[in-house]
Image (cartoon, rainbow, N blue to C red; front, top):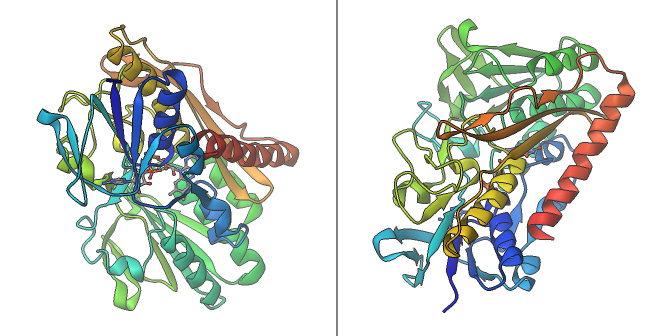
Length: 394
Ligand code: FAD
């Protein structure tokens, strides 16, 4: 019988690992478990929130993956019986595997901020999983009055897409600047520094002077409680009444990771940085946002890079070869305005049991660059989205 690999989760990580496995070793039987009929991509979803992009441009189906000979199982995985090497589906059907790859992305921690639970998220959207939440935040911005306060609550590390909250603040500002110019944006942050901070803050001073205020942890930025019914966010030092409140709460690996026993007490999944095999459950690999990626940020670029490295390692293990040490790359583009992009890049390799950054190999956009460079980077970001979604779903 051919070796069987089952993948849980058809996002950037899961779709990419399934396809790489099948392409590099067509003799392996690959099944991809994903309950949604189509995937909704988060990258560029901040442009949807700002009214710059149609939501349909974020949707990707699974026909391309099926055409590769991968079996798409349109269900939710509810349990893993790792000692018998089986995944249990919602309808109690069991799928046997030789190797399992778990790529469920994130779940919000609805127990982390008092008052912020799943019901509160219907009033104060996180919009940190693209879909209905993205559209809800868009509608709220459309109906808010000119002169209103938009509060964005940014989470502590680690979380999905480190530059994401700040890209969102920028693009919301680009919408408000034209449509509701008396409005303000307040970012309440649970940390004292953030990704590409100097580039973002320099860009805000040029593009949106006086519109965006950022309050870090040391200055009382952490949101300690919310009251969704009155649009109130509390911090250690005061409270803020918002016209629109975008609460991005602390996160953890998608629930199936804990159920399967691959998440530790942090809520994330420790892995071997060469094979991405779980440190807790043998035969199970974890990639993407759910994994403890060391220095690698949680991004779609990372999930795709880890998927390729994991696929090579899984093939090697199934075929009795020694897995090779991977070198992984990540680049994250952010938009500050439709024609103003910035980026950060890094190279990572296994060191002392973790994925560590290769010194001197990465970097960010220059702090003082002409507008033409920012416009070029905005275009690169758009091109990157086309490339990665074609690789994963096209
Ligand atoms: P996901 O893409 O979330 O996929 C997980 C999949 O698993 C989902 O389809 C889910 O339905 C499925 N699943 C979960 N549980 C189960 C189960 N029990 N059974 C079956 N299936 C299950 N990254 C970038 O690189 N560049 C960007 O510009 C960028 N911008 C972003 C902007 C925003 C606003 C946000 C929120 C994120 C952004 N990201 C960006 C981050 C990127 O979206 C994530 O890092 C990426 O989606 C992680 O991929 P993943 O495969 O780990 O998880």
